[in-house]
Length: 400
Image (tube, rainbow, N blue to C red; front, side, top):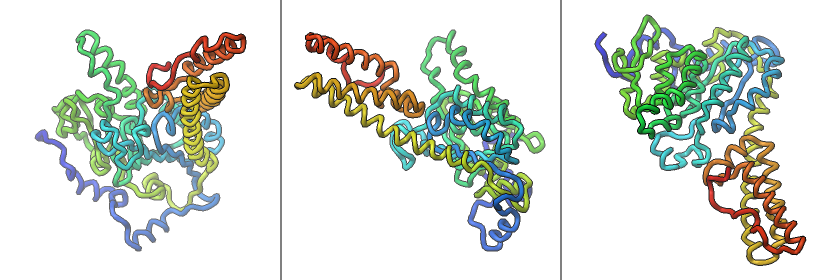
């Protein structure tokens, strides 16, 4: 076959003919809705048990390994016939908005996805190893960067018609290294997690790596009904020409290339695609609810954490203007309350320690609290203003 750059409509006719039910991207008419409703119906107890695992929000805070690891035993007890992971984690619509810090309709810059390769692999481990006896499918409603890489760890993927699989340069810090003797080693280390994800998802390593390495090219060749991916541009379909050209695949393209199994608009669509007909029921509703509530709870704590930090800074300022002991005590109370939140909430701790936002870490708080306590002790013993409160306040990063 003559090598060609991928066209959005290639193989579409074959796709629609083979999978007409999964190729619907427009709103169904009344007869279609009746057909779907007659095919699969939710009940209280009848039919296969379906567990919904939401993965919605920011990677490493809303979506983090610690959360899912703590639910493994309860998921096993729920004994679902199918686990459906709902992925909605899109921190940006384009790289320009990300680099410029524009909300772009998807939240402030602080809500952009963070890339933690260890956490991505640990989440994948939970589902691939500890929960591997349960059939699973991921429904990508939208994804960007780290969430795209995580989504690729599931062999069975479905996508909403407006969803994308977006690449990221966040793992590519190695691009700033000039020394040729160390560049290759650091690059290999920074992208090694892509091999694990590819293995879990039954996907070509070249495909997964292309989503995190901006300089490699990617092409594929059809072998019967599968695409074999390779680094380079020698395949029939060139997806990524390399040199900063990274994959950003729409749902229709991902489905044509067998990365996604089909385009869906509801849980019912996924069940039909998985061969489930008639009735089904939802299990583990408390698990689903707890995951949703977890995001709500830590975000409320984050607001309190920022309040405590800002109040501490205010007390520190006032201490320099008079009534030092009273204001140092106020600063101490705020810092201890902040420390208590950070030690009990890893998402809040993750967000607060980001450089300059405000860049506060647990070790820094402990050091500062100790300095204020020593200062208060000196003041009690008549040595006024001896230590200055353990170091000043407002700068960002470096508080570690």
